[in-house]
Image 1 (cartoon, rainbow, N blue to C red):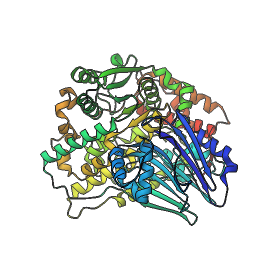
Image 2 (cartoon, one colour):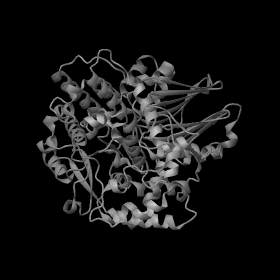
Image 3 (tube, helix red, strand yellow):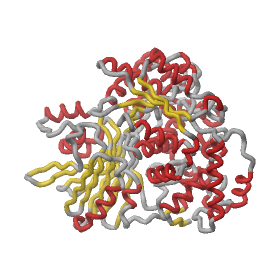
Image 4 (cartoon, rainbow, N blue to C red):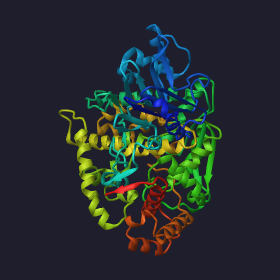
Length: 616
């Protein structure tokens, strides 16, 4: 795992801009603490920060392929290729020779053999920048599901790119400007592909190749979800899901550094951890290291909220007792979640206001920081809910049938309600309702069609597509930023594109054959999990209910409101803010009651730290 950046400026010699290229590269230090490299030749410049996972001694980047003593192709690559061993054998049989054991060299050689078609042969999570000196073209490639981020901005004579916005923004050619569309993206949980809050910054879409030449920029898709008839019966489908998961987990355990798993006591993370334990045992290794997170005193004070019916700890203990992992529980102090240094680190990792999910950002950051003390790679259970139908809005008819994003319907919307303290005039000017409807209509129009599909299956295909291509992208971004902020690589087995493609086409009646959420996944892993976990309903990542956290948020917002120079102040409904600040504090602080506070505070921090111009 690494951080990548680059700059192509046709007609220029970027050697004279080396300090700028170095500054862009330096912004990726947290993503790659082990090594760095810069390559510049004429109109092209690449920067790389490395987190060594495969072949630490080799695989340095940017990696250069030479022809006739001169560079022919240059690669800067972030991620992991899980089928690199098979590709290496195939390429060796075609006559290619290798100098390293790295997957990086396999990616570079694959391009030399197959050109842009190499992307479709990769199984993994990745963001790639590749410069061909012969054709003088740049390829930007992102993995099929979008696990690894990749941003770019057009310039007058080329393009800038990077793993995170900060790498691009380190070049003064890109203004830090947010327009009405960008502000709408921040305030509403829509996560439109390719669009970012910064007006001049784009994101490479999952499964997309962006090609840059002197003639301009073009975009093509090398992979996308497709609609196909599912002909397997239920038993075969369950068996196929299990077989795929076993292969995926086995591949994703490959590393030359310590590997662990995240374990919440829910179905998804428990399934991954159990399969990882079995895979390691089959190789004579193990036990797997597993980690869970909770808050100090939470066991005695837990109160069910809108989405969390039970605490995680008892289920984690059941799992560890049965499976026997080398487990550690990370206990967090809720007061630390509001620590200014922690929040500054989070903002520096996201480059955007991380408002949604509130305290889940600092708690995830602190968890990753703790894990990094003993492991460099961790497997996580993200994306099973989107694929197998785990969220509550998959089960509620009013959410499924609503003409909008299902997570933004009554019953779920308050979890993502961050605009409650925003000035009403600004909200009307932005027309968030109209913006949401436009984005929803665009998304539904993208959904692949299977002729003859029932109305129920058609709608559930749409709901699944919306979750995978919109909601899931926000979840993956959160995990990527918080883990890479401490140099921890998170692998996401459920994001294997083979599994995504297969399960996406399973009819809904089969996905929910036992009348519960994630029926297929539960059936496919039943033999490796405790009954308590098999019977547990979906519960999200833990959130603090400690009133000290909300008190800290309120105290900070009072300071913001009292400062006439606070950049967020003109965007707020000060009357409503005052009312919230004077509201009596309950005995338990629930996360959905803190959304407005989180949004206002993160917006203020972001506008201040990033010197953003709001142009609405």
